[in-house]
Amino acid sequence: MGGLVSFVVFIGLTVFYLIAFFDGAEAWFGWSGWWVGAAIIPAIILTGKLGSTFLVVVAGYGLYYVWKWPLWLVIGVCFPGLIAMVFVFTGSIIADIYGRLRR
Image (cartoon, rainbow, N blue to C red; front, side, top):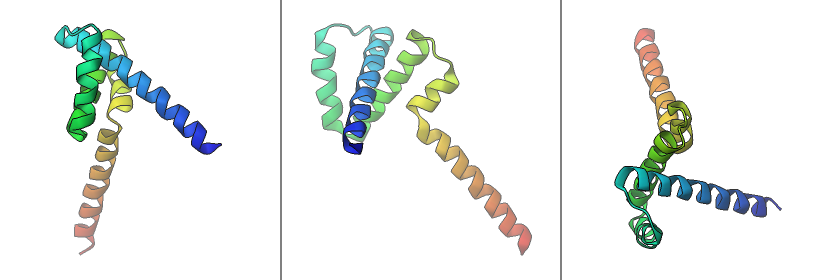
């Protein structure tokens, strides 16, 4: 049962990101039509992480400028790694300062 729920969530998120990507591509680059999906989606799949990064950046643009989402929500949805990175770096800096003061 858990695998089915995970699969449905994955498909839902994929459709969500693709719709945001198509809206962002149309607003940013002026790309519209059936050829966008036919050309871009295979390119994203074949280029791996670079293509995924392109997808997320354009989807974030679509969420912010087309759907009028607030910036904090766009960052939370499209770039959760940035939030984690800020917490990890902050914790690392605090631990380093604490370690230097203990000497």
